[in-house]
Length: 114
Image (cartoon, rainbow, N blue to C red; front, side, top):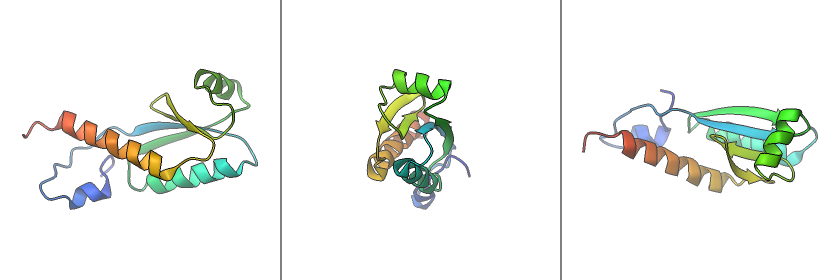
């Protein structure tokens, strides 16, 4: 049931309409503890939310371009659906709130039952 949070499955009367995954781009570099933390956080949240995560080395041409466009001064940098979300230590709470908000908006926009 990709695209459905586990919590939604427990909600009475909830229509289980899949939503498209959030595309997450993670700017990383080697030997970066905050990058490792961000990867672990995304792996955990990927168990609850539909995420498509791609890691890009900040030293690569693509990574440098993304860092410049998103004003990411140092890794990890996180982009959600192409838009800058955060850099530095990733806050799981902040990301969870954003993903929940997006899911709720997607559900409300796609719900024709009421």
